[in-house]
Length: 199
Image (cartoon, rainbow, N blue to C red):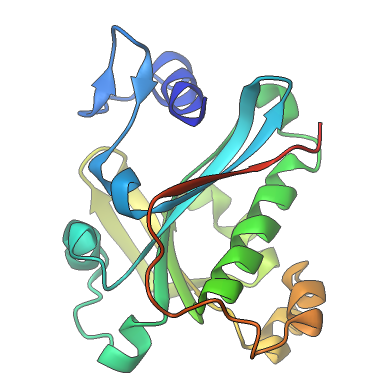
């Protein structure tokens, strides 16, 4: 269902070229999914929001590391960094709390897996939205994404409570209750699909 939602939004709604789109089955599944963590919000049997994260140290993410200019990230930080991609929400739910829910879910899931830093790209008009959550526009960098054109490069220091608090970030409540010893592992998890059956 996640792959169908991707296709619906990227191909049918936005009309964007996606090299991994399967137009017969109307799904969009990428090689990055095989080593990533996919989160989804569902209504009945359909996905209405989704997001993915992969570890920066994952060899499959080399294209993103190069695109974002992250080869200079120290090894110690690299092992605790994730790349967040494929955030999307069904248009019928965009003015509800679903987008916030999926962002909170990926933040908490990343923390529990041992992440401390996150990177992603977004369309320039959406920068202020993510800044409210605590994301920062990394060096005001604009990168030329091969499929989406010019996008802003964002970074998030997940453990920087003072920054998150200064933005009144919804992430603060999660970080407040987070126990640093409650980490499952710093080893990148295998592909899994998780759901939030809230609707």
